[in-house]
Length: 204
Image (cartoon, rainbow, N blue to C red; front, side, top):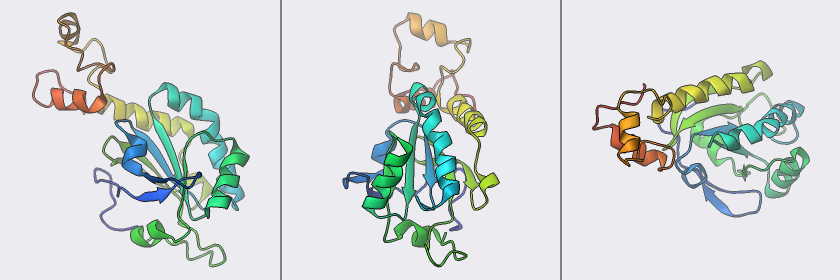
């Protein structure tokens, strides 16, 4: 992995075609939300199918929790579509058959010259593609469980959401005075900006 891809650094804002062939930037897919990004070996791998099944099954929880999921593989568009459809996934799959990310991040899985995939990784990203957690998924047990992602995302929300704990001093007063920028009714980025200069701090 490239030496500057670390926790508390920003993941590159790659632009790749999605399963429909439309060009999509990671930042646009993320919006103002936390995101789980999985760099996948591709649909040929039974381990990837098994792991992504867990993400697909958990997708209703991610939607309820304002959290995005994106999968990228070196599959071409047809393979990407077939992989996504076989899983019944609703979240975006991006296609990188030219191996732009594999080369840029230096994550070639050299032990598989036949498929030449990326070494699979899972990233937990705060808004702004800020890396909160990195999992190396070369071995299946290196992949994060849904319970681990739950814990990781709880930590992210504690950090970015000033209204995570409604008993935080000042929140009730802010609400009663009509200042809703601290609450989920406002975009997350506004809430972060607001708290940077106030006494109502974000838990970090």
